[in-house]
Amino acid sequence: MKHNPIIIALDTSSSLKALNLVHKLKVTGVAFKVGYELFLSGGRRLVEKIVNQDVRVFLDLKFHDIPNTVAEAASVATRMGVWMFNIHASGGIEMMARAKEASLKVAAQNKIHAPLLMGVTVLTSLSNLKDINVSLSIEEQVLSLASKAQEASLDGVVCSAMEAPLLKKKMGEKFCLVTPGIRLPGEATHDQKRVVSPQEALKNGSHYLVMGRPITESSRPMKTLGTLLHSLNLRQ
Image (cartoon, rainbow, N blue to C red; front, top):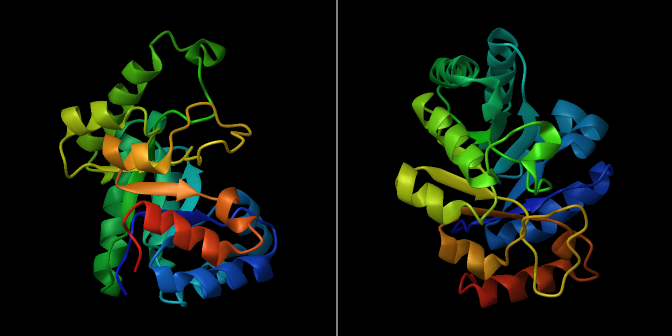
């Protein structure tokens, strides 16, 4: 099965709904994101059930704490067999580096692939950093945090696709960019501020696009996803 850059956000509290979506959509080669809502509902056991469906799982819990605590959390996430997980880049270089080291150590001990570790830069729900007492522009803050993530040997960052061209230029082609805030033309943005269409995101240099409601809330999610993949020339 060929993988593609779409990550489906399983933003639901229903384990049954999440597992049904995985069963229906996995044939397309998409990955699946488990965030707070689903994790707090289904826990580690559910994440491992999804992993055992032979799909890529992005554990989106945005760890942010003292370095030792985050390193221990990274170790557990790695043992779960997830494909990717994230931590807040604002936690600092030591925190990020310790998390990466812990993940690599556990992966080596268990003879498994180390998951991709992504640093969260600026949430796509934010449009003015003065609200959180940051004087930099969004672009300056994203670049600063991405640079720290790269220095800490992380695999890439989570950012808006609006910042993808800048990061691609400054950080290099291999630095992975995961972009939420992806919306179809005419779709409601809800609580997202810095939104981009799937086509524009890929053009800007995004490696992975996180999408949820347009697909998961569709009456025919497989058809909706198929139409999207076709429009991006990603149809299996």
